[in-house]
Image (cartoon, rainbow, N blue to C red):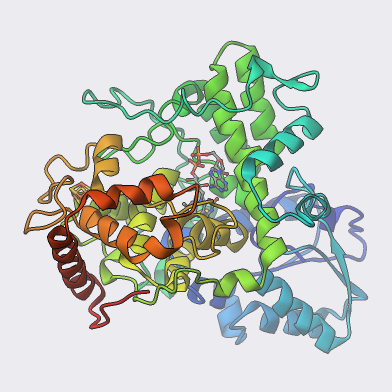
Length: 514
Ligand SMILES: Cc1cc2nc3c(=O)[nH]c(=O)nc-3n(C[C@H](O)[C@H](O)[C@H](O)COP(=O)(O)OP(=O)(O)OC[C@H]3O[C@@H](n4cnc5c(N)ncnc54)[C@H](O)[C@@H]3O)c2cc1C
Ligand code: SF4
């Protein structure tokens, strides 16, 4: 059995494949696109990559029992457990072999279906990660705090990445001070156009099915050009290393209007579908440093994301599930504003990020964390609704990576497991890191009045609402202390304006989001 996010041809599920008796089973089912209201490009990417995988396996002379959506729907399969039950009844296998699913929900539902059928299940580990789950659990056991830096250093040493003996190359583990700059007034200048992949006949058939079966779903497939095969994924990585890696670190956090890609790698969906191995990405970046193609700060910044954050959040996901799903440390209860699905808002930063998201199914990390995520956090949106949106709307969204990033890092719903304090900021941060505020009808420095930036109003209101929790905490006290400069009149004006914003954006009479 091969799931849609396990498309590596060297998957352990296929290791001892015997063409004389074995069959590869794969299915597209409607429920995987509707359990969250999936962006059309996200579903198209899964179907296109799965169909290419099936076609490549078929070309190797292997029998593939592939259920395209039209066939699944005609047979009455609504979801994966239903489809698997029918497949087992039809094929009567001695056993089902799979690689551990990446998603808790999928794994538990499919295990229950197989148990009900009394069919033997052979579960094999997913080789497309750098750190085994057992190694993560051994590291996590007994820890009170989970900090990326500790995890990252340990596994950089163990995997011998950017090391000189037992010391990090360059004498430091972290080059954050050289990274994270804005583009300044002049902007990013001429940006290299990333390698994109025009849909071939297989991808076009996947897109056509999405348009046929999910016409009302959000987003567009018109500009679909994501890698859908291992060859394309490798080419996308090489293109990044050659043309954008050198600038990646320095401008990792910067944003600019109408420039969705900047110097980012655009490989998350290929990594998550297992079209590309993370070690290949790490070693390619490391080689670029040794060849003088990219500076150490950029290379370290990139490796920190792939070997660090990506592996770290995966471990935390499995360590904390299923409890993670219901976390809501700040007791936020408001509904997600409607405009997250349409991009129709006067806030230029939100409009830019949402429009790009609906067009491509892509936004880079700081757009997700400090624009859309920050806004939901400041407003007080229920984290489970924020999670459902992020899982639906990005082409790279799979729960093991999306959930810790959304509930943990962005919404502080896990109470500080991933981040030691909330990632919250006013409009001034967005002004510093982008040109979005130019031409916006709001002004980032204002917190009250008709031109006040909603981020800034809600930021001060957020500090006030959560002062009990954060004002005395050593990691957040400095940030919270700033509100002491506000007079009591300013504070009540901010609160009244924040209440009006919540009314306007959430359509809810509830004034206290927690
Ligand atoms: C609220 C929120 C939700 C997110 N949801 C997802 C998701 O569903 N799927 C997903 O792959 N990433 C997610 N991320 C992390 C990150 O935003 C994306 O991995 C990144 O934007 C993908 O674009 P890129 O390939 O151009 O990455 P780059 O910016 O070029 O980074 C290189 C690679 O590093 C890895 N990476 C970077 N940051 C992270 C991170 N925080 N966690 C895990 N891996 C990281 C990715 O594999 C990425 O491809 C989320 C971040 C936030 C704040
Ligand atoms: S002024 Fe505020 S709402 Fe407008 S772009 Fe800047 S941060 Fe966004």
